[in-house]
Image (cartoon, rainbow, N blue to C red; front, side, top):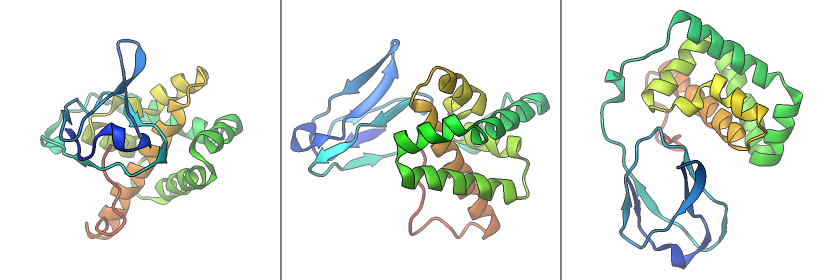
Amino acid sequence: VNVALVGDETFEGGRLLACYDGAVREVERAEGEATVHASTLLHGVSAMRTGVRYSLIMFFGNPEDKASDFTEESREAEAVALRSLMAKDAFLSRCAEVLGPGKACDMQDFYARLLAGQEALGAEVERVVVMYAAPHLRPTHIAFRDALCQDSSCWSAYNLLKYAAHRQLRRDDGGRAGNAGEVPPP
């Protein structure tokens, strides 16, 4: 659930975008309106130009209870796809343009943190995809969109790695990480 705490008319940019019916669509909202959708819906926000945008985001359900359709083979395929993407200069260059140099650098740092961790890469991918019910974050899906030169592939890779690195950090410090500078779910 995404509640607009200010109306869209109070700022420029910052529009809620969602991909459905084969297109990216702008979702117009007045102050107090709620948008409800599954976390599997590919969505985002356009760049802010002026003003301030406030939203209240709520997640419902118990993601730990979700069943996984991952197999040992699919975990390995996701790990191979992620390694391939992160070794691909053209992908990393395009992501630097799409995300900006700061987030592109963060993405590579998140990836390095994951590689240094104790968990298998495919298992980390599975945890994020299942936790957030976000199949668009599967590296095989990201690679498909990258082959079509879709900017969403960069944002998905960034978010997958950010969420996985954050989960790993929370595990490593006994669940204490996340208060200041917490990485919110998608």
